[in-house]
Figure 1 (cartoon, helix red, strand yellow):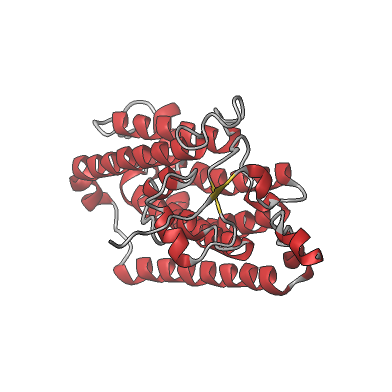
Figure 2 (cartoon, rainbow, N blue to C red):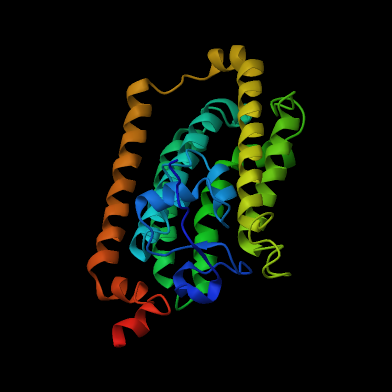
Amino acid sequence: MLTVKLPQLFNVHQMPRVFWEDGIMSGYRHPKSTALDCLLSSFQMTNETVNIWTHFLPTCFAHTFSSMSAHARHICYFLDYGALSLYSLGCAFTYGAYVMPDRWVNSVLHRYYVPIAAFNTFICTGLSCYSRFLEVDRPALSKVLRTVAFVHPFVFDNIPLFYRLLFCYGEGCNWNEAIPYHLYHLFFAFWTGFLFASHLPERLAPGRFDYFGHSHQLFHICAVMGTHFQMEAVLTDQLSRKAWLSSYYETDSLAITLGVAATSVIGNVMLICFFTATLLWSPQGNSMVQNNIPGEAKAKEH
């Protein structure tokens, strides 16, 4: 009978510093896993399993293959950051088309809203990738930069919605049936950011939430719920405002939309390639991955 041996798990003291997560004490995969080990670990209870299965396209993004090596971990997250940046651009496309207040339609901000959002993707990817170079030596600054990298495009993308909710009253303010969905989206977005920045609850009880209930798992779940309500809100706005928008707003052509999207994709790929090359060949990049696994370093000395 064919049996499959699952990879061995480790505690935090057996792992290089670059793999540590605040408050997570056990359930770590081997930091030099093979690709097969990483795939098998998707069906094993580790401290990443729920992260993997709550992640969008889990077998293609960061958590699945991040334990192959320190280099692989950083590169996987570079790709993850690029994908999240492009997601923010997708939000800007839909918000510019359907969520913009009536009063702002065809305004200067409306015309430049999507191009600015495209530029923001470069800021988001560049800043978040750079933050990984500070992760070991300056973890607090690394976390701040990474948080800012994603809060910035979120705030910009939601300027039309914030205006509708906070400052717009009376005619032309689009207070319609989409508003409750927008509020649910913002509620889950708040908890997504809070959980990402706070590392709660595992910081209060290290080791208690290694497998279930730690902040990154809850972060993923809130992000998925927020995205669901965001899509419902956009669809509701689109349906309720379709007639008015078709009369007063001339949408961008498919060529322009694809051009902006392609420029953002190419630019983000170039940024990821730059940071990957820096990681692999620069002295600073080499210093990021010099933390050997305890035991291996001693073995090499003998």
